[in-house]
Amino acid sequence: MTDKPVPPRPGRGAQAARMAEILRVDHAGELAAVQIYRGQRAVMGAARGKAALADHFGDLEAQEAEHLARFDKLLTERRVRPTALTPVWRLAGFALGAGTALMGEKAAHACTEAVETVIEGHYAEQIAELAARDPDLAAELSRFRDEELAHRDAAVEEGAREAPGYGLLSAVISAGCRAAIKISEKI
Image (cartoon, rainbow, N blue to C red; front, side):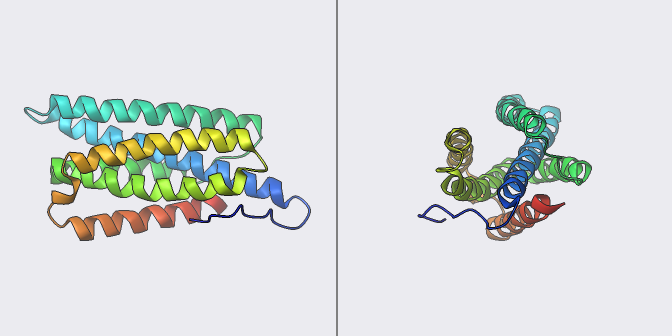
């Protein structure tokens, strides 16, 4: 994370291009988060004795859907196209959520922890970058970041780090998230 504000890129249209990247990637991330929780909710909802956990994932999905709705609006207002990979992220997010839920409750929580940890760092960098140029958006991102941190902390409390193969699972999911961020900014 950067402690100092990131200076704007030089050149004509560079700030608008950077804002488009920020909004595009954040929209993609929230869309994927909705799908991850939807996949986890679907698996746990079908499992005997896991209704409360399915409801928990449903609550997280609803909160991510609020974030997604805000980014939908921002994309429209600022005339920014979403990532061309939206269908891929929708499918990949659901598959990640369902796959980790099929591995068990702890693995589902490990998924949440890994994803939300990467997203928190990503939002923190954007907040530092936008603090002076777009303080209102930086404030919204701060609220979203705090909510993501609450998801991560709840996952840890529920035993995320007790998942079988936690270290590998967390590393793979984190690397995938970081790659998706870089790709979604541009495509």
